[in-house]
Image 1 (tube, helix red, strand yellow):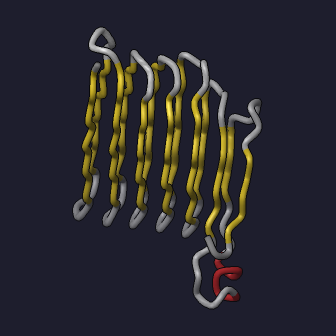
Image 2 (image 1 turned 180 degrees about the vertical axis):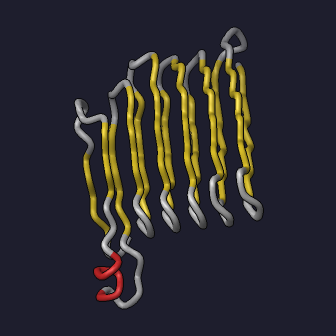
Length: 167
């Protein structure tokens, strides 16, 4: 990633605000600045991506059984969220997207029981929400994905695809 900033999220940090200075973008020959966040091991995460910022969050989830996300994407912000679950998990996501923001989630589960509740609020025109998931487990495992997507403004797109393989 050109013009990237890498931020490691400590295990005890639960609130992150990624700030984007548009003047910096203008000095970088029009390239959008990107941020890469790496994290693991927290019970909740509140993430605000400011106007115009581009963020990739890569997360390897540990033994934390319950997890809660609160994500805010300001106008023109972009978040690619890649999560790898290695243990049973119950997760609640709440996403708020402003005008022209983009959220992409890739959820990979290599364990057993999963329960995910997604509540997405598309609060501006031109939002793009894409969620994909893959789970590999045994036949006795239970996997549940509940998605509530609220389009509060017109001209928004959303896409969901979840695939499952059981031994």
